Length: 362
Image 1 (cartoon, rainbow, N blue to C red):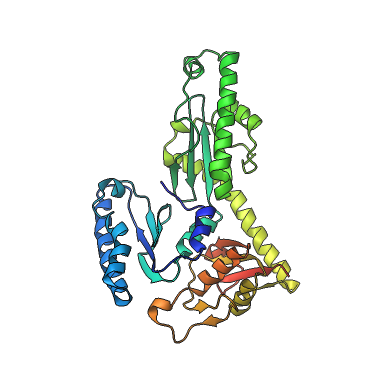
Image 2 (spheres, rainbow, N blue to C red):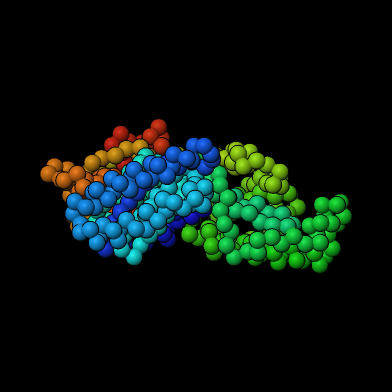
């Protein structure tokens, strides 16, 4: 499963040679529901080809369509879907991301990629990772309140089952040598998770495993985002994926709600000091100037139009359909480019009614 990370997201925000094609589609994990996915994809490609043909030569249209059309008859690709997918394609760029939340079907052809669905997933504050450790192996999962999925743990041997693991399973104590080997293995796992996953995602890391294995792993871990309080104190292999998700969310939810409450409270405080606003035009200009420190963005709000990247002025009238973007999406991109933070907030927890709330650096 290939998921969006901060690093990959930042590369998508860079300037690319057009046409920049953005395609989003809901998909399904299991049969028979997944039989409809290639059909919808084909229909989306037909519409995409039609749109490209309006403004591009046949040669350029074929060049843009070839990498997408190559997926049509790829049975393995369609058998490995999640809740939805995103495909971003431009000359020299072809990215496919598996998403753990459904999205609405969407196709766009523009000077830049349409990234708001990715932004919503990347910046949503209910995401987390779980590291499952045992004497024999380590597994990494990523999820949110609704979905959990295993991700490839890079940089670690796939399976490190040792004599220690077998003897422990038979009721015997592991030797000192085996314990030393397990400690070395846990250090290897910790380093791989930190360097290959935590730094790029910035997600909190829950630990799942038996108490004695959790104690050893925590003793050697240097991961600053490893959640300290308790973890999931069972062997994750004994749980179904959904049971593991439920136990994880029970641990994550209090942190999630506390963080949102803190962000909302901080917005109110900064607004009272003249360093915050929920006026879209004001925030758009501040974003263009690089003054937004934190932007709270309502999850399901859209505002047709574009902003001038230099001035932040909003344009709504006189745009062709292909030029119409989402003002809130444009503001969020400007904030990220300037090093600010964007957090997607559920509608019921937004402190404002305008779709956004921002605090300013100065």
